[in-house]
Length: 390
Image 1 (spheres, rainbow, N blue to C red):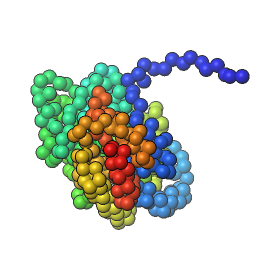
Image 2 (cartoon, helix red, strand yellow):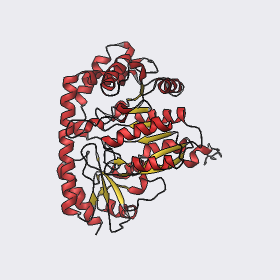
Image 3 (tube, rainbow, N blue to C red):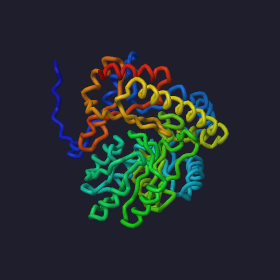
Image 4 (cartoon, helix red, strand yellow):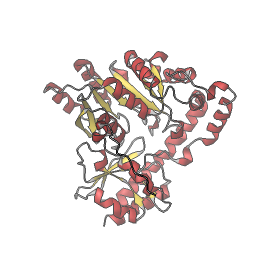
């Protein structure tokens, strides 16, 4: 006998939340014959599984690693993070809160800072995770375009002068997801100055900053002002499954985030925090690991961009200096959403630009992740993409 499905009324907050095209694609890209440029996944061959296993075994000797922990995070991990942040932004350990991934950090921030209808400035194109969080918070989204030097802060300044009053401004300042570009030093200083002048907060979402191919991470926006909240993550530099992220910023914001986190999940896993602390505190190992990740990823970026120039010359391609992503544009007006099914038939996947648009524009663009595949597979993937586009 079929069971009757009850009628359930859901919160109207969900009405504004668009599903993630990237998550929807993961089912298709899991097929072994598909070369995926779609997911923002670190390369599996660069994840330090043996070192993580060693750290896990060591952590498990301490009964505290399998207990509840402090909501603000494991003291040892917060100290390691504070040491890193204090060198760059002058933040003490009291201004560090550990979260269950940086996506939780973003969600907690939105719930702490925003009331429905508050204006939030996001970049165009926008990081999908931020788009969903701010939609769920009921924010009024206002977009500012990007160019090769990141957010066009001069455009933001003009709109502020014309009366725009945002509660906060969100930026992926380094090696942007999805555009792959990095905000210039001059724009970083100006954005911090605008925050001070107009009283809004900047949320600097920075999971990719340590993946600078030249080994020199950009100076954070937070180094130039006090109204910046920084988000960091172990996902791209260690492993996503650790689910360890963090917030650093003004003390009142961090205290509010800690209070809200307490009623959200009590605490982030003590075990994965202990693992992350072990790896990050081992500076010799971590430095060598990070150098390997940068070197291999930079080579893959060169291979991908070279293949695009040779096999798909009709597409414009950003040339990244770090991170994981390239942004392709088609001046001939190719509809990338319509192209995707044909690409999947040819055994390659990407994310259409429309997935990163607040208003469903960007029809002739796509995001490609070069970090996950070896150079030979990247060339093959671009060849399949070119075949699907003809």
